[in-house]
Length: 555
Image (tube, rainbow, N blue to C red; front, side, top):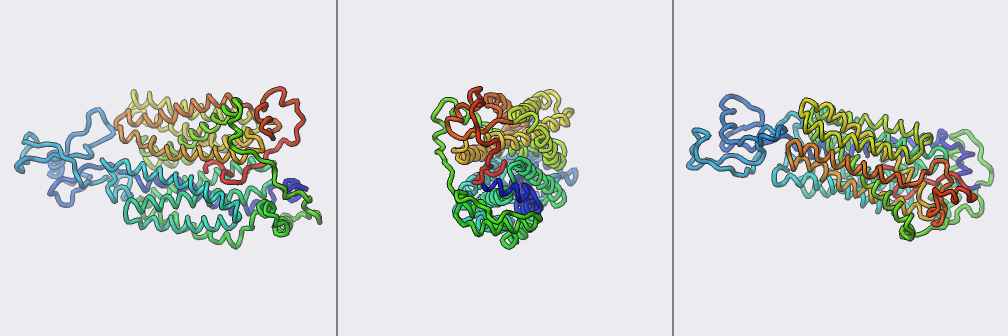
């Protein structure tokens, strides 16, 4: 028997697999969801203005009439076209000869080096703690972006390590790194240390989610892999909802980071609980150890496996091809570039909309909570429609829905202002729903489009494109703050919407994969979707889920 035949006899998603899936995929998925977007609270920049010179105990909130008069005297008026600001954020009036009796005295604007901050949304953030404002405002985007660089490094490095030393050892190493770096981040002494530690958190988060998913899914039968691939997204969304609640209650970046990092200590127990992946053991020729894991699973599932489990050729390495083979024909080249672009856009849009929550106006915490909650119906729709509508219709519909919703915000922001703030937020949340659904679909869709001989290589490259989108996301999300005003509020949403619509339209050029025999060779890939291809005799209707660094959607 081959491995999938063994899993069918074992029970494709029996009690043993459910326990393993919950421990290795679901629980870590919650923490991974938290760490992927926690920078919204760590690097949030509250409303601020220059501190009034020689005024002790100055605060952003007005203390008295005298305090208000000093603010009027020293702080320049805001831009009249920008109703998102209360004060000029970066300048104060410096009066010549210390003349401060009235606002008509000789004065000039001067950049300040000390600020006071509003406590309305955050009591404390790392950005506030070290004054990442005005000329240093770009550093918040850079820090967020470098986290996703860490995710890319972790996926590539820990993905290769997982294939070399095993899933279990790699998961344990990733857990220890995630625990140490996330807890240690709370005591980051300066900006450079903060960024370096966040890179480590990104790398380890990628490793934990990736490797845990692989361990869990490599024991799931063929017919249950779609379900397993989407359900893990639900726990990722649980992490977003949990983060919203904890952040609302604590409002201090130090305690938010610490309270959500300390629970990761329990993941160390995985070393004692989780087995090594039997698929990996077989790939290394360790058949006795693989059989031991499978028979233990059979005992828990209450089934009896045959005395002889493996065929003599079960550990044979399948034929593979190089990534460059995807660029050897015009058909595959166009198809591959469309897939790459869709991965990049869906990642940029998903994370960008999450990071852009604070730029929407309205209640910040409610907006963030809703951005997490909308993911649940997105994944439910994927489970209901993927095998009914097909991959292409689901992906294109999700991209167009989210993209058009984001584009429509330019009208609500430009012509409605605060009166239509609720509609702007609603449209942005529809955009988030669409990007979340598209993120869940694109993995299945692209995995089925790539020929078997180059599937892992193609999915690995696609995943790298997604991480490039994640690296770009903070810059697009923060571009609105840099521009300012109504136009600045609309710019990120327009970019996300326009890119999503373009990617969705391009995806129509891809062939449908539902109920199609999947391509095995490069030649099959070229002919896939044509009448001639459908007439060819095929071996299988199922796809072997890639199990290297791309065994999930958001990483």
